[in-house]
Image 1 (spheres, one colour):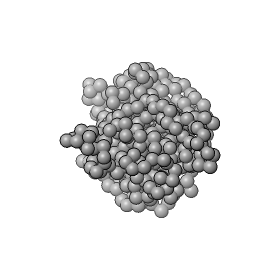
Image 2: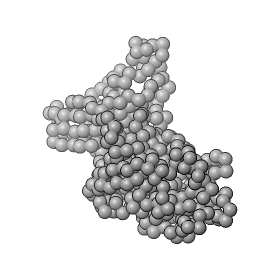
Image 3: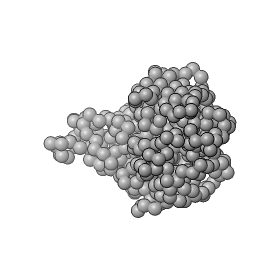
Image 4: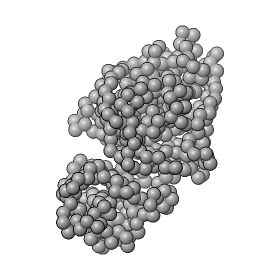
Length: 430
């Protein structure tokens, strides 16, 4: 059964030391609109750029999950994201005045306490879900990750660890994800390192904020585990946090052997590719979608100015997903960089506005009113769209009032963000 998305009931503020930077970071977590996902907002940078918690913005960095959008970046997000996946918090704004989330006690326990202190509320939009239908395999060196289809609802994680440290045993654990199980068995597990690694890690600039309280040191008799198998439990915590970057719940059985953030991210990329392919094929539509004839019924646009080919997915009046198949036969390629064809950025925005129009016109269909584009804000054109690309457009309604509506839109090609904007519409009599 599909669940509803959730966000915080109220804002909550906190501060703490970054595990790697050693800097004191002040943070505030706030509710977010349905479909917004989790965004990290760097309030210390000009224009306070937002970095979405999505695999499209993942960038490789050792020993933590690193997200980057242009020059803005944020580190060590996995513990908070594990809470979001563990107890189903889909939409959240996290403001921070530095490049790394606080480490707090080194586990997800304090983040869980903060989220539950703020409270969680249900929203009027279904959560996305990927039901895996084929095995997915990732291997890197001695690390492997296998995601298998499962007939059981929800997510099962299994981790097998081995540590190259004298006197330190490995272990394994299987965990069926539930909110209560996450609170009890996974959230309190702290980050860890091997005693033989400490000096080299410090010389390399890692762990400037690490202490005996927030980091378990395996092989150090003075460093005691909170409960049996704490390192394996923390590996499951990290995996859950990285899986949040998929942007959807996952029904699957995942078996991990010695995997870390890099292999976790590669698995998420492959899962995201599968999800996009299924959406394009219509396998994840919440409604039947709209073909071009139905689009023409709602929109006044006609060739050559109709810039969406099919609406794949519609969630009520809140969210819609469509595709534009970009071919060399597009009339604008004849005059726009004809020797190196590029889809004009303004037409990418127009395609976004047309999909927003479909979403709004469905609501206004029997009201005798029209949605007219009024303003465009926070426009970013981040990548080229060329012949042969399939532009995937997604819009979500942020606010809808009697006279106006505000919509957030994004465009991606092969999972890479190429355009985004906030669109404002005025609702007028036809």
